[in-house]
Amino acid sequence: MSNKITAVIAIVIVVLVAGVGALYFSGMLNFNTSTAPAAGTLQSTPSQRAPNIVTSSVVSKSLGGHWEMTVGASGSTLNASTFLSGQSSVPLVEQAQVSPAVVGQGSVASPFEYFGVGNNASYNTYQMAVFVPPQTGYALISFAHSNNSKVPGYMVNTIKQELMDHFNGKTSYNSSKLSFDTGVVSSSEYVFVSLQDNFFPQAYAPGSWYLEGVLANYSSYNIMFLYYTPHFLNVTNFTTLLSNQVSQLKSPSTPGQPSVLITSSELNTMSGINFKAQGVMAINLKDTSKLLNEYINMTGSSNQISNVNRTILNNTIGDLTGIEAKYWNYGLQNTSEIAILGFSSSSAPKTLFDLTMSSAGNSVISGNYSGWDFAFSNTTLTNPYYYNGTYTEIPYANQTTMVAFQGEYMLIFEIEQKNGVFNENLVKELLKDESNLV
Image 1 (cartoon, rainbow, N blue to C red):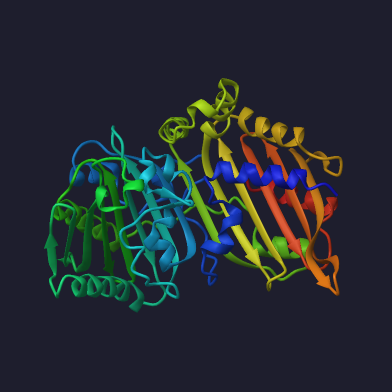
Image 2: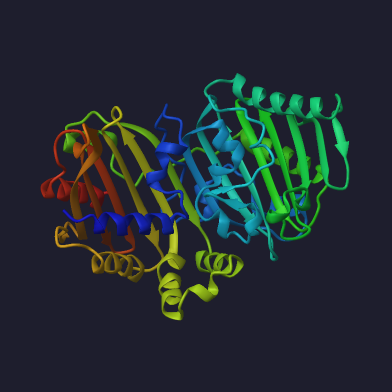
């Protein structure tokens, strides 16, 4: 069978979620829980998706100027290294008026990711938001809750101690290129680090920008701020913001909206496999077209994209308002990912679907069911095997990849099964279940 539709859908996923989509969960998340995402639907505002992050007005007052929340996300299960690296910020953070110097391999640079702590520590839920000023730069605010109440304090104290060891036991150090401070505010212990970007290797330095960060712990939470603009801010700007974020966490809002994706039990009934949900993520975005074009211009891609293709991008990805995704597994050879994307117009998902179909091979099965236009393909996955100079392919799983659209939604689904095949009847059952949720 042809792998064309699988390849095309993979490209669509990567583009839509800026390299960190549903298929990235298996490497990004620490598999230990399956908490549902926070309040909001795919048409919600970013602040509804991250209801316990401080507001734009609070950020503006603390950091100065006018900051606007453009990305809001919530989810479950990630490891502390992911949190410290800024990857909890995931999709489209790169497009939030950020300099290319801090963008790399789908993550956002963080002054805390280099300390080598937290690989085995995990969180069960998190929320994050990206704020942008009228000019260039960004501020990321993220918090994560741990089932182990010792983890948040361990993270802060370990980094604090490493910094103090580096600077001969000092709890505060300031120079023209590097600053750090430690302290306590609102019962929250924090570490502050500021780096001028020409502190980095010259190849990554676009000019005189500042990368600043705060890592703090409060109760069972770790709180992190990342800030990257041409303007230096003092530690007091961030401690003011930290005090406000701690106040927000003292009486957090309760998520009120259900998931818009099928449940584990529904998937298990269809597949006959006892899948366990390992990760959930939901993101809402604002002014995506503006962010997309800033990213294209900033990365020097303008000359490489034709006017026709740029129009297509603006009318598809530029209309993206929300993403929700789940990842399941059962052992090593049974995995499944699903993502649903919401757009501000019905023409956007239809255009993406048509583009997918235009590159699909003859083995693709397509149709319409329960209001969804769908297409899927089955592939046998193999591993190479060499013996006595003879090469062969050993089958190890069956893979089904499906893409569908209905109204303002696009649905992407993939499943790998050691035994059995997800046939057309099961695809239709999945689409019927989703029709009751969107």
